[in-house]
Image 1: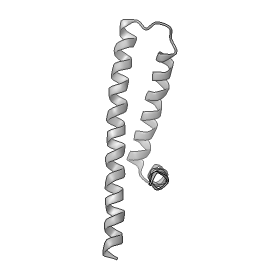
Image 2 (image 1 turned 90 degrees about the vertical axis):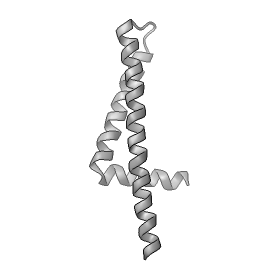
Image 3 (image 1 turned 90 degrees about the horizontal axis):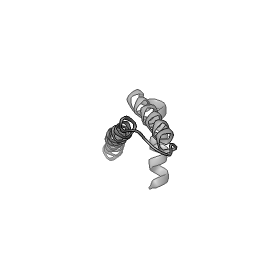
Length: 82
C-alpha cells in the first residue's frame, strides 16, 4: 500500500499543477524550518515564525492528502465502472 501511495504521489507531482505547487511550498517550509531549528537560540520573532511555518506545513499536507484521496477515489471509481 505504501508503494502504491508513493507511485500515486509521484504521478500527481508530474500531472497535477496544484499538487506540485503544494509540494514545492511544503519543501520550502521544511527548508526554512530546518534553518530555524539549526540555530542555538531563537528570538521571539523566529519562534513565532517557526510556529506559523509548522501550521502552514500541516495545512499544505492536509490539502495534498485531500488531493491524493480524491485522485484515488476517481481511479478506483473508474476501475469499478469499467
